[in-house]
Amino acid sequence: MYGRARSLDRLGELERSNSRLEQAIVTYRGVLDLADEDSNLVPLPLVRMAAENCIDRMIFRGFFGKAVRVQQRLLQRFPDDVKLRNKMGVTFLLMNQGSAAKEVFEAVLQQWPDDGFAQVHYGFILKNTYKNNSGGALYMLKGIESGAEGTDDGRFYFHLGDALQREGKVEEAYKIYDRAVAKGLFLGRYQRSLYNVDRLSSRPFWTPEQTTYQMFFRKLEENWEAIRDEGAALLTAPPQDGFRPEAENLRDVGDWKQYDLFTRGRKITANCVKAPRTCSLIENFPPAAVCKRGQVKFSVMHPGTHVHAHTGPTNCRLRAHLGLVVPDGLRLRVGNEFTTWQEGKIFIFDDSWEHEVWHEGDSPRLILIVDVWHPELTEHERKTLVPI
Ligand code: OGA
Ligand code: MN
Image (cartoon, rainbow, N blue to C red):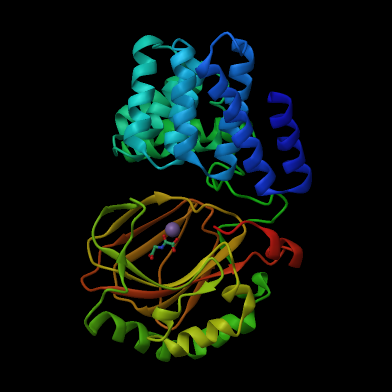
């Protein structure tokens, strides 16, 4: 039965067939059921192989709840196997169940306090699910220093540095970033995106000519008043439900909201009906409209806001900001360079570089954010890159 499951599994891979894969999953589970019925029937190593393959394939198919149940069954047989326990924690993380994952890693660390894999994941959860930067940094650092398998991952360096920066330990953060650069996990100390195409040229700010899209950007500037009027009307006319608060925990203090027009290369029709001119300008320019690794959105920021230093997810897009309503007292830092917004004017930056915003003015600021494909990406890449 195990051989049959393996064969179905391989066939599923070769034929790229989900239904084969599901047959394999059912057959692996048949092996486990047999073992449950009569423990003499299936040798323990085979139970384990069947269970591990079964779990892997379930996770591949996105059947996380089922995977957890098989993991629990397996743990009953191998209660002291730390790798299995850690793997279950990861499955909970994949399911976005931070609190369940936390319990798993906490239990592991009670029994094996020096387990680097559990440390780094526990710290990651403390920081990201529980917003505990100091605790998160402590455990992520321990985990990274352990050198244990699975700890050498850009995400841990990213969030460890971020936690340190937010704690005001900026120098320590950059030491971590430099280590990650040396390991090839980041493109640069300021450029820490994790979904990259490596050969793309990169700088904090781009001129319209450097992007090759200068005609499009000029057109946006020529139409800035119409764009402003649409954005401003959306802000003043109730209900303002299209504007949603920035949800990635990037704000230190203040109020910052966004109104999506395009995300991941798709038009948000319900929002575009309320900003038809803006959307039609975008729609006529494919490198923005179908940029699957970007967005087009209005961004409103209220006085007193500080946006933490942060880094976008990918180097595959460039980000244009068109100033619409711009009071005095605003600053944007990208890498080591500073700029500010001007009404009717565009600047373009690469948001895979660390950036930070301060609004020290006394009235709201409104801009249009337009992401475009990095000009050096091929047509084939633009079609096939996974959306972000
Ligand atoms: C961004 C960003 C802040 C703003 O566009 O990536 O962080 O001022 N913007 O809206
Ligand atoms: Mn940003």
